[in-house]
Image 1 (cartoon, rainbow, N blue to C red):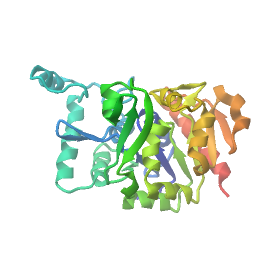
Image 2: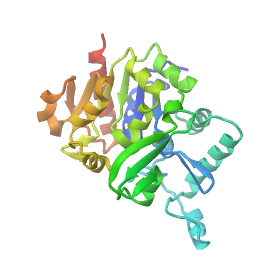
Image 3: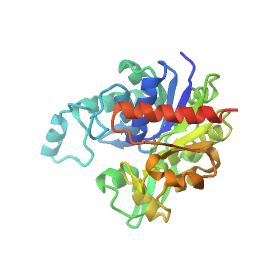
Image 4: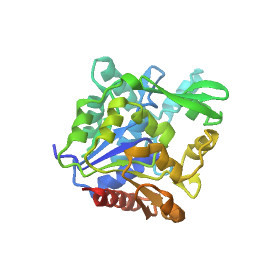
Length: 314
C-alpha cells in the first residue's frame, strides 16, 4: 500500500467534506482518516456507525448531495413497513443504507474488527483511501443535559439537540486502544500533515482525543498538526457546535476552538470572514474561504490546509 501523506482526524458531514477535498488532490492510497465512533450505537439489533458511513458514502460518490449524510436516491420501504407494524422510526434507515448495517453487524458478531470490516467496505466501494475507526474498542458519547444524561443519538436525532448541554463524557475512551492500522498511519515515513477537520470539536473530535494513545500520538507527532475552523462569523456551518459552545459558557469563536485543542496544534485555518481575529492566535493562523459547498471548494480548503502544514515543517 502507498505510504500515507495526510492523516485526517474527522467526524461526520463537515469532516467528510474535507476528506472529499483531500481525496481529489492526493495520489490514490495516500490519505488516511481516523473517524469518530463515539456516535456508534445499536439500533433495531444492528450496529450503526454514522460517521464512518458518511465518510464511505462521500468518498464513494454515493452521499445525498443536500443533506451530506445517507445515500443519494434512497428508498424507504423498510421504514414504511416498520412503521406499519408499530416499530421505532425515530432513526431512519434507508433500504440501501440498511444493507451496510446488516453486513457490519453480521461480521462483528463473527469476530471481525470494525477496522477490517470498514476496510472491506471501502474496497468494495472502490475507495483508494484508508478509512479507519478511531478504535476497535467501544467508546460511547454521553451527553449530560438539563433533562438528564442522554445517549448521543437520543440527544442528536431523537431530541434534535434541543436539551441544554451541561457536559459530555466518553464511556470506554480511557481504556480504548489504537488499532495497528491507526498506528501505522501515524508512523508513515511519508506523512506530511495531520489535519483536524472542521467537525464539532466537542461532539465529534473530543471522543478521539479522549483516547489516551490517540492524544499522545498527536502530541508526539513529528509532522505539523493543523485544524480547520468549524466556526465562521460566530456561527457553525452545520450542526449544534455554536449552540453547545454557548451552553458550555464558551465564546463562539474560532479562537475558542484553537484554545480547546491547545498544544496539540501547530497551525489553524481561519475563515476569511474572521480575518480580523488572526492576530489573536498564539499559533500561525492562515486565512482562507473555508466554506465547502462544492467538491471544488473542498479541494481548495484541503490544499490550503496542507500548505499551512508544509510551511510549519522543520
